[in-house]
Length: 263
Ligand code: SF4
Image (tube, protein in one colour):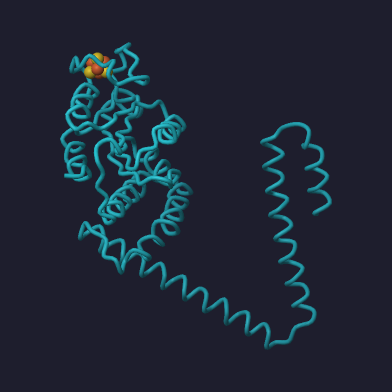
């Protein structure tokens, strides 16, 4: 099987880098599973019933440990969200919930074609509590307000992605009010066209704290991807459907800024 896989890999090698990369990882997976299969075969042939019992005991203990960890992290998440703060003792179980239980929940909701946004919004909420628990306050010049392009009225032709100051504050969308807010607070506001542009803006501007507006999906992905700087997420509203003429509660943004700007 390994030889077949290597042959396939050799054949696609010169064709396409993505395919080469994919088949390379598949090959690695086959090799790992193959080694495991070899070890199991060896154990099967040469081991005593005592070894089987020991392996089963380890698996039983491992299952119990995982169940307890999930139960504790579930309880920690519930307490955290209800109390709106993370107790220092709950930091690790809540992190386990975010890193293990939530991806599993997203996988299962995807499998059954259910709405993933419920889980994502919980992830964003807990992330915000995490950032808040660090008592992070910064001067306005170290904070970046990151905004999605879909907040702009779709009929407005002004290029605000280059510079939000190009907005004439006509009142047809929330960009004008956000521009005013950012000027009032002295915080940089940057409008981006997508996740890659958002990451590039963070790399270029080097903020120490990001207040980001986006939908559940983009925020959850962005928060997971950007590990170099804390990101606080604020969900947009989508009265016209996704990605067009979206809005955001500007007063909520003001409250968040007041929370994070150093007095
Ligand atoms: S508020 Fe600014 S971005 Fe929005 S439509 Fe008016 S000029 Fe364009």
